[in-house]
Length: 137
Ligand code: NI
Image (cartoon, rainbow, N blue to C red; front, side, top):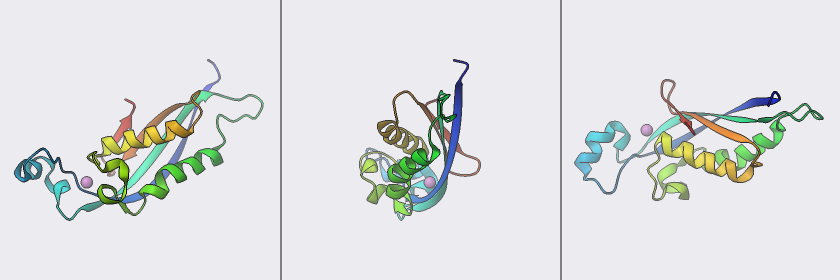
């Protein structure tokens, strides 16, 4: 356990989204989500931090090859999300409201699918400078 260590990779992407619950009336949506319910969508500059934790490989001196992590984040998150409308362009949000919370969970599941299960993954997603989400908590 003394070789347990974490590495962090930061990435950035821009997306449009609209927060709207189809089970609620337009009035309920507008009053709950406010500006984030704007019918014509709005954008955010998301900052993503992915923390990988595990046992340091003594032979290589690496926890994980950052080139590998970078490639997976690019393929799983940046390419499908960057400069997209999350509601309209990204199938993961066809039925799921693209809140920062749900985006974090989707990103976690995508990365967990591609990374070795020996790694512990933590997502920190900044939707604004002041607001961020951590998953898993
Ligand atoms: Ni928003």
